[in-house]
Image (cartoon, rainbow, N blue to C red; front, side, top):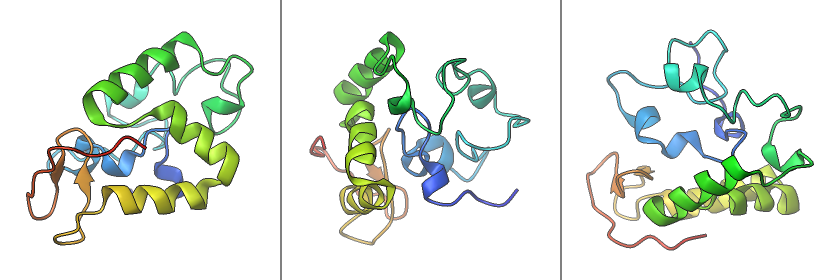
Length: 138
């Protein structure tokens, strides 16, 4: 399977799959949330947000119910544990566009030491292993 473009790595919930530990790992590499529906990954097949019946566009922020209770719970967990707000991500995409969002993501999640990608779930560079104890919430 060919890798998804950077734009397609942004999940409907606002998660940048390119920063996810499942996407960054080499063994059992996840192709990202927007991968084909016949993906063998149960997390993709069973994602409540990705498979939401009300989702009729690319992103949750286009839904009349945004942010729904599921999005609020996911956002709270990610803000608390991983220094990322999915709701803020989606609002930035809506206000400034996907390219602007991707530029900010690159600035925030690129290792200043080696240029690798910082794993959002581990606060560690997936290339050189440098640990980041405090990443600012954007």
